[in-house]
Length: 501
Ligand code: ACM
Image (cartoon, rainbow, N blue to C red; front, side, top):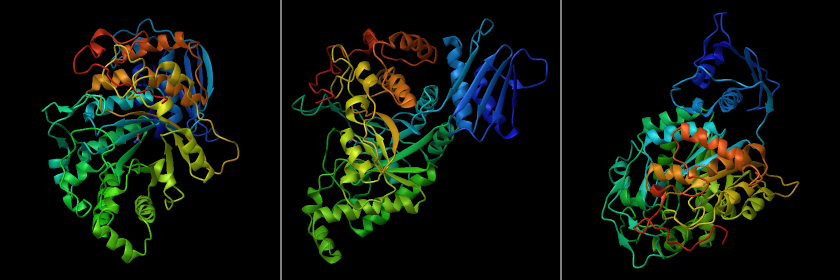
């Protein structure tokens, strides 16, 4: 198997076609993979021509080459997805001609590594699984009330204190009452070198990492480690062992902002990405309103209301990201707070209507609504393990596409699926909740259209064999394996919430 390719692409191409065991060409091979650069093609576009004895790829950039490598692998038997193929003598590649460009430049998956830490090696595998589905953004929700997963060289207490919690609530708060706790510590964090490795591994696979530092709310872990960031007058707090909108905020005062700017600079240094997400979601403002020191600051700064203070703080977060040379990203609440930079990308999570509002105001938008893209909800509810709720079945995910009016000034960048991990305590459950729903989401993200269901069920069934060969412990279409169920114990699904409520 031979490879012919422009020199500066050859390492990349050898890497992406490694499952074929390709070698630089010597002239005596039965199959030659030829890769040609054509700058006239669009970003991520590829042309693929498979004929007897040759695989021809034309692309404008490495991302296109990577997608072509993925499509060739899909054309082979599912065994081609094993990490090291065990038998390749009988592989037959069908003759095909393909010319594809993705509908959206942003095809994302968000993993919450704050509620439950996901070890680095599993994130590296996930990157490969995203590339397998031609997704191109890995959004890592790195911080929340229950854990801070980023090493800070300036503030070692973040790793020492904020990366672990003493215990975790059992069941779903508000549903299982009174709350009880498991008494077992949980934690973990990525070193700066780990984050650089994840970023580089993602780049090799055509994926940009979007790191999220969730501010100014969801900050209990941060404040537990650095109490100087607490709103003056509030009680000390531990890294939080329970779930929900907790209501704590970081201090909006200048001394706290200086530390926040330092932390964001450290994250930008560890994750070389065009983007830096600063959260902005679920921020009740009571702690600011109740603090005499905050009111003094508002008077001194001429801020007439808590809403004006919020605009000022969100504006500061956005501008700090811009000063780091990155594009700010915020959840849709950020759009409703006036004062954020016009460059801010809005992730519409509560409903697509918030994304439409942001598009009308000229922001670029990623559609990531609960209804259709939140994988922390179970598919059926029966037999499944503990989750926030149910109703996010394949049919629902297949039906999801953005609906936007014509002639809005902002650009719809794309779509993203989310896995929040309050009820996803380990990597096996991550795989269970993510696949195969993510395969369907990725198909919609690539084509820009919904997936006919059950019309494409056979195709998805074929794909399940690839997932199995890749070692992904997906949820079978007919329902969970016995060992994937919640049973009658602590992991029994008890929540009555539905995804489309
Ligand atoms: C979110 O689900 N709070 C973005």
